[in-house]
Length: 291
Ligand code: ATP
Image 1 (cartoon, rainbow, N blue to C red):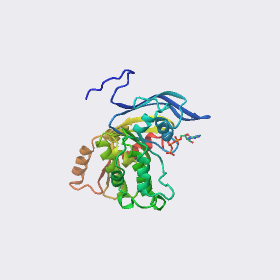
Image 2 (cartoon, rainbow, N blue to C red):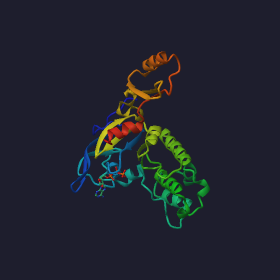
Image 3 (cartoon, helix red, strand yellow):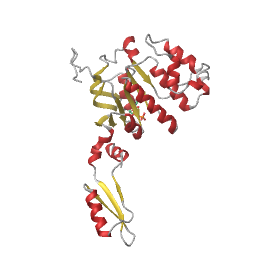
């Protein structure tokens, strides 16, 4: 679909546009000259090590932190001057809240629904996040993963156009993570734009249309997760065992030719043969300068 242009020059398929964003805490530059575009309807993952500047960036986009410099538009507004209407269009799931004294899950979700004119049906939302069996449980009795689900329920109860999720699956067991990923895919299929921060590379790979890697307050790269760091063009490592049992390996841009040559050399089966390419984790660690 061709993107139209709004009066201020912002393409109407852009949910978030950031240019030259900067934020320092004293001498500590947390975000330095960061540019970023997030398209409407996409799932965008922000990856980066501890202290990279993800939360600072996301909280500026959410309107909860002030920037020092740069241009920021989120759903056609400047988050530094949030209006109640704009707040209603943006859903936020922060890192770990999920506890509301003696209130039950149903009470909390119904209560939050009252804040939004176009709120979703609270009981349906409870069901959707997998908390139906816990609807009458008091929130302080929920497990860590169940509290995160409640956070998500509160983030989506207002039917946001744009949803921010800060490390949403930390503390989830593998099954809960898979269920949560399904929920994100459903929300995305329904047209919600999603920005999530995560430390889990498989989560970015499973969910994100594009991922941005942030390190030292700078965006190092933005690409589809399977294309980050030119991963698909990375050399393959071919390993095998020589007749005396020594492990040999070689890097190759044409591993098939090398394996064919090895097969001819060994007259068939190549002992201990493996062919590997760098994983997303290998690429990511290289990008963030891990030694
Ligand atoms: P994590 O993955 O650990 O959540 P992050 O990528 O979200 O990290 P930020 O929380 O944005 O990183 O922190 C970026 C830098 O800014 C860090 O050096 C941090 O110490 C600093 N910082 C963040 N918030 C504040 C604050 N309120 N006051 C002072 N310094 C801060």
